[in-house]
Image (cartoon, rainbow, N blue to C red; front, top):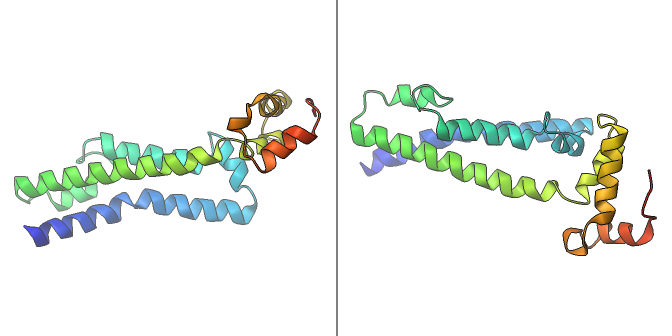
Length: 160
């Protein structure tokens, strides 16, 4: 069973990690085109949210009909213990990767990164103004002590 468990974990990892692989390729593509930060700030194009959604489907949809149905099909004839191991392993890996992506993505949703909305033409003037005003209303503990703190200290309260 130990060799089988190791093989199951490798198969599950190769399928579950596809969402993270796609995320990395998307970030590289966006970075090469100069749109990575802008895409992260727009929920419609955010590659982190896309990866989390895909991993969430892996964790919540039935193995036989969700994005991991190929894995379920591969182990369909296995004994009940192995099928349970496949289901548990895929679930645990999906949840773990979802949490890790969320942790790293959270860092990009605050200031100073959020200020990219102020110059992104995909956002309306009202949305651009709102993010700048939010920046200047943010308490010091919420601001990056480098760029954000210096910006708040050195700029007028309204720039748009």
